[in-house]
Structure formats: structure tokens, C-alpha cells
Image (cartoon, rainbow, N blue to C red; front, side, top):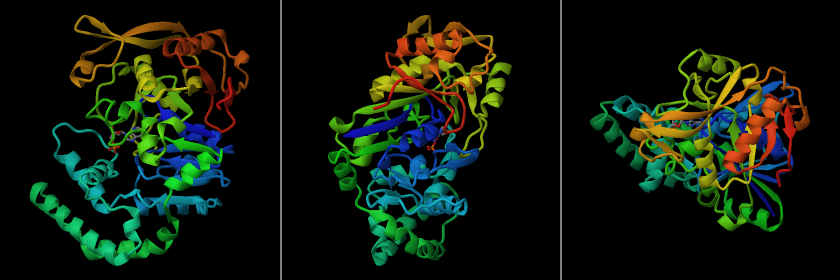
Length: 426
Ligand code: IMP
């Protein structure tokens, strides 16, 4: 049995899409277990760029079955649009199924997200894809699941019930407008024939595949620091993007999870609000943003950039149980004279070797840095570890030592083929 989980270890945008695409080559099944179309996974195949938000990045391998799992909040309109883009590009999408337990992310969730962000004193900087409101409805037991779309009379009644409630909220609390039931219903009627054949009971498909020794790849979106429980709350997303999310979001027992691959970007980025201890608000930060192309794949927002924060990666290891690290975008650091890596937070004169829960404390933290001399060699075409400059190897070695997790693969460029394989990911 091979179960591989790929997770982000920072604030997302570590390059998980590319890694999933690489590992998907050997996978029989690829499963997304949390999040929704707030993700932005960029995969470059033969020079062609594909940006995926909702579909698993493994969708580009037509040999593997792709599952949108029970823990996902799935906007059906976005899903079809994304599929249409792939089909127009000559790819097939007949290997995608949606769990009948997945939450249907509705048009009113997107509007609610917008109204809530507008009204909030403490803005989160969400992607406005309706993620928070959809998960809130799920836990308030007001959500609509995909199996409820099958009996259309039932769906109509549920839509009416929830939309009436939402319209009161929009008009009476947020001073917004009401959404029209008939228009919304028509939009759903128009997509029904395409969505229905994709709805399946997926928990037994996933578990049977594991029992039959097939390779199942679980694709995380977002990352450890955006985790609803252990991230920088409240500046987080509303799901569990850690390996624990696989158990609840794909119905897989913890004992069945063997490999947890943490994707670590060689520096840090963050989009949205919240403390960011190693943030570079100077020319160096701007240089990293430009060189690394750090602009949101979902929202187009410029990402905040900073030095690598190893307290963050250590935290991600603790909450995920990483077996392997895949290091990405280290080529972006080429030509920086001195590199810095954060190894502690100094808060009110005390040095922390872990991340405090209280974000007001984190906001006061000063990074304790370890410095490394950089390198000038172009590493983007290298394919063997031994070819890397010694200073680059030292940087990588330190990441391994500090986190206690081996670096199994190093991504040195955006294409599927730009990788250095150090150790097999099993
Ligand atoms: P939401 O997930 O749209 O509710 O946004 C909550 C927070 O998570 C915001 O700070 C977003 O910028 C951040 N976020 C959500 N998805 C991603 C992602 O895929 N990459 C990076 N940040 C994300």
C-alpha cells in the first residue's frame, strides 16, 4: 500500500502543484481532501502553463482517477469552467469524480465572503471564493452536499430554505442585496447534466484502492500556517491542510498514511493579512517577488516575500509528521550575496524556539537569523545533487538538520523536468 500526502509547510504557494504533478505519474488515484478553488496550483508541462484552482494538479495525467474528496468545498460552476479550459487545450476530463459528501459551494457563499470582508474590522484578506462561509455552513449543518443535487425537487427545496435565510442575512445584517432564487435555480438546472455523472460515493473507492496496494496521492491545498486549528488564527483558511485533514477529508485512517511530503519553498511568501516575522519590506523583498514571480495564481495579488523561516517549517513538521521535504524555488536565491534563515523569534527579550499561538505576540517578534553565503552559479539546469555549489548544499543541509527531515527532492525550475532527485519518495 502506498499512500502519499503532499502538503504545504508555509503559507501556501510553495509549488505543490508541480510536485503533485511529478508524483502523479505513478499514482492510480489522486485525491483532494480540503479547501476549494482558493488554491492556485501552477503546473508547467512542455512549456505550457496550466493554473488549477479546484481540480487536483494530477488531472494532467489522464491515467489516474482524480477525486474531489468529501472534505472539499466545491463550486460546481468553477469546476466546469476549469474543465472546459483543459478540454479546449486538448486534455481530457473524463477521469474526475466528486464525492457525494463534498459540500457544494454556492453563489451565495461568494457574496457572503465579500460582504463579511467588507464589514470586518480585522480583515483576513480572503480569496473571496466563499470558502469560509461554505465551511461555516457545513459545521452549522446548513450546507448542501453533492448527493442532494441528485433529487432535483429536494435540491430546489433546500436551495429555497437556505437562500431565504441568506437573503435575510445579506439585507438585514450586511445592508447588501438579496439574491434571486429563480435565476440561481436556472443556473443550476443548466449544469445538472454535466455534474450528475461525476457524483459518486468515494470513501470506499479510496479505501479499496489502498487495500489493493494501489498508489494513492492526497493533494493538499494551502499550508500548515493557514490551518484552521494550528495556523496563524484568525489569518487562516477554514480547513485543515495538514496530513490530519486526509483522515477527516478523505475518510482514511491515520494508520494508512505512510508518506507525508512537505513542500518547502527556499524563502517565505504570504498573501493576505497576518504577522509575517521574516517579511522583507525593502528592495530585497521586491527583488525576490520579481525574480520568483510571486504574484497570486488565484487573485493576482503581489505576494509578501521574506527569508526562509525554519520555525514555520518545524511547526509544519510537528503538525504533519513529515517523512520527506521537497525544496522548491531554490534557483530564485541565486546571486544573493548573503542569505538569512530564521531560527528563533525574539519577543519582549525572550527567544522562542516555537511559534506562540497568540498572533499579537508573533506580531512583536524579531527574527533571530543564521546567515549563509550565497552562490552565483546558474543551478536551474542541474539534475544531480553533486553539481550544486557547496554554499547551496550547506543551505540545504541546514534545513535538514534544523527540521530533522530529509530533503528528498529539489526543484530548480518551473517545468516538470527541472528537478534533482536525492532520495526516492516511497
Ligand atoms: P480563504 O481561504 O479564501 O478564506 O482565505 C483565507 C486566507 O488564506 C487568506 O489570507 C488567503 O490569502 C489565504 N489563502 C487561501 N488559499 C491560499 C493559497 O492557495 N495560497 C496562499 N494563500 C492562500
